[in-house]
Amino acid sequence: MAEKVNKLSIDRDYQKYLYFVDSLGNVCRKQKSGKGNLEVLVAKAIERDNNYLYFIDRDGDVARTERAIRKATK
Picture (tube, one colour):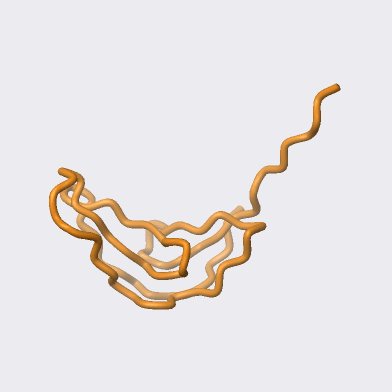
């Protein structure tokens, strides 16, 4: 189950853009066509922890879930 990290309520247009949290903790969007530059919507929205995956949930908020850990095979 995911937990909310930051309530932003971002309005999203999934027809034209991809939304994500970059490595610096910024909430960004990029055109799906590949044209145009990366657009930062919210600078420094979160402080990242490498044990979690961060994403924009259906409410437009930043959420996180624990990373799956692979077990070593012998």
